Length: 82
Image (cartoon, rainbow, N blue to C red; front, side, top):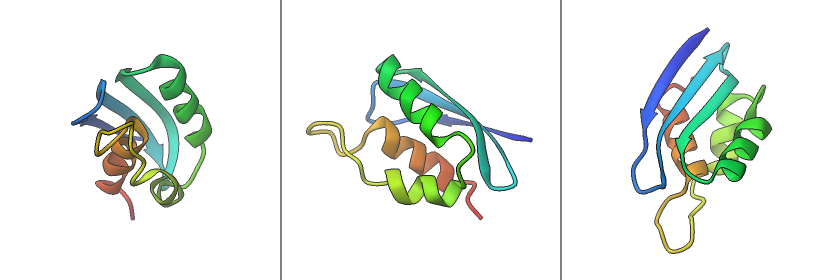
C-alpha cells in the first residue's frame, strides 16, 4: 500500500491523507473541513478506481470558491493516477 499526504488550497480542509493500492483508493482522511461532508466523500470513494474518482469530483466548487474539498481530492489523486 502507498500513501499520499496532500496539502489543500482554497478550502476549509488543510490536508488530505490518502492510502491507495493498485490504482484504487483504500482510505481517505481529510484534516479539517466539514466533518460530515468529508467523511461522506471519503466513504463513497473507498474502493474506487482513482481515475473514476477524479472524473466524478474534479471541478466541483464550494459556493463561490473556485475549488472544494472533493475537487482538492481529485487534484491530489491526479498526482498519482496511472
